[in-house]
Amino acid sequence: MSTAPSTPGRDAATLRATCRSTVQRAAAELTGLSRDLHAEPELAFAEHRSVARIAELIRRHGFDLRLPVAGLDTAFVAERGTGDLVVGICAEYDALPEVGHACGHNVIAAAAAGAAIALAAVADDLGLTVRLIGTPAEETGGGKVLMLERGVFDDVAFAMMVHPGPEEVCRPGSLAITDLEVRYTGRAAHAASAPDLGVNAADAITVAQVAIGLLRQHLEPKQMVHGIVTAGGAAPNIVPEATAAVFNLRAAESHSLRRLENRIRACFEAGATATGCAHEVNQISPAYAELDTDEWLSEAYRTAITELGRSPLDRTSERDRIIGSTDMGNLTQVLPAIHPMIAVDCGAAVNHQAEFAAACASPSADRAVLDGAVAMAWTALSAAADPDQRVRLLTAVNARSSAPSNEFFASGGVA
Picture 1: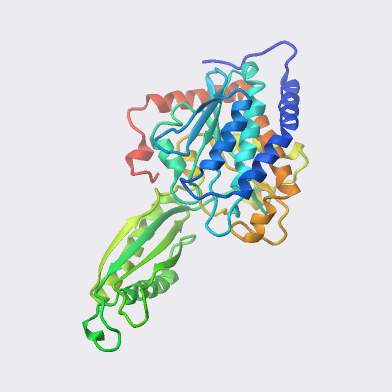
Picture 2: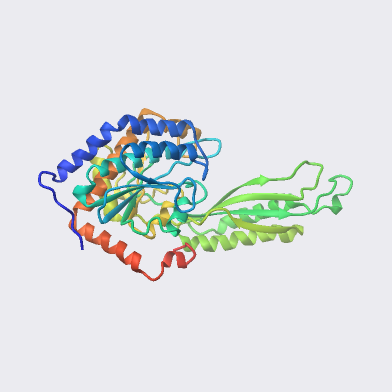
């Protein structure tokens, strides 16, 4: 098993200083990238301008770039170094409809690029291969899930990213999620002269929503359902023939999510049965698993971000911090990975609000880009330089690559 290389005169303190100074020299480029992505938000699987900007920056810093990868037009892999320990730094860059970068993926992408550039400067000292992995469609679409299934992470020993939020949380939790669309088909008729001839698809959605509302009393802890009607009819004087709604289903863990999905599908069926409509249910995105972040890497990140002058929540307080859902959860089910939250000054705003989007193009967000980059670089450096951790990480990735089958995917992507 390989051990971390050692270079005379390049001790850990020197390598850390090199990472930090590298980020400082690239600060204008990195914060400029964050502001550029913020100014032109793009939705899932359509992040072409965003990827082009990231690619331009990372090529300037000597990275070899593959674009596209995994059959996804806006997924990429950029790489430097030839070490046996592969660190994957995940960049997200998709935005939300109407509110743009209200989840701060511009900050995520720029911090990831910064961490990759910093680690490239010390990759030979640490026996690292530094891989910046561009992962599209986190808000919907599950870019990381698809890339994981298609082999992009097969030789990655550990992965990381930082996500902006209202609080500093080193080891947050998340909920497993699946997105379901239900479509009802009835029969149109004149709503006044021949309503008896109509089969009302809007009523079917109403029945389903009532059934879901009544079900909420009996949901398991941390199970959630929320949705919107995406098609409700054409005009009030026409009995609606075709309607649709989209629902997010969430649960504390993936087994609970499957139980919830069975119950919600029964509510959808109730709408069809009560009204005589036909119905179909489609899964929009791959299911996202809950976060199961690596404890050692999380604590290494905690040390790094604290040294940079930030004050993360203590371990007891952060246990209750649920950040929603993320496809990074699927990575953490398969390989050591972290998904810490880095604080941005945003007043009372929270993610997915216009006010938070504004905060993600601010001096505080710029600082989060640079601090996040350094903290991730220092975390990777700590893991690569620690002989025990290096052995643990390499042993795990070798075992994963030689396994006859992946239990996570064999179970349909729900661990």
